[in-house]
Length: 217
Image (cartoon, rainbow, N blue to C red):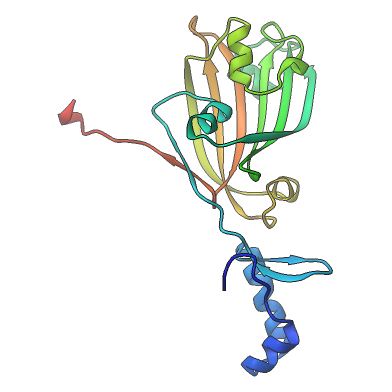
């Protein structure tokens, strides 16, 4: 069956396969959990669309906006948070801030070509960016305009299962697999200027790195 094609009703599937409707219902629930089909209340069950996979190289430091722009993809954002608050112990450690410092908090869900791709949650010291409302598009471009363009970053990638809230934002089933990244970026003076935790749809996003033998260097 093709993406977005409607599946027959449960009763028809059960009759055609000679199994009970309970068996059919459990099978469909399993396919929903795997992201292969979608159930729409009042409309029926459909084959899930297969998103075009995006590959991001790990050899260059770019923002999501810059990376998508280089591919010719359009991007949109849905803001979840733009606020200022007291730094947490984890944020203080990564951004080398003292207890009691304040950070700008930015969270948004990013789309590429209308497909939800990533939920980003960034933290910037208020000494660098006092007002998070000034960020409209690329956070890195905003930091560049403030004189703190990120030029180097440390990034950790891990596999996670999405909670219900993030899964809903990315339009995938709860507990679906995702790629989690923690990136701390530094400016030309070596100061950590932004910490970002991101959750990427694993069915639509890949990270790619080129590896070279030490003997070839």
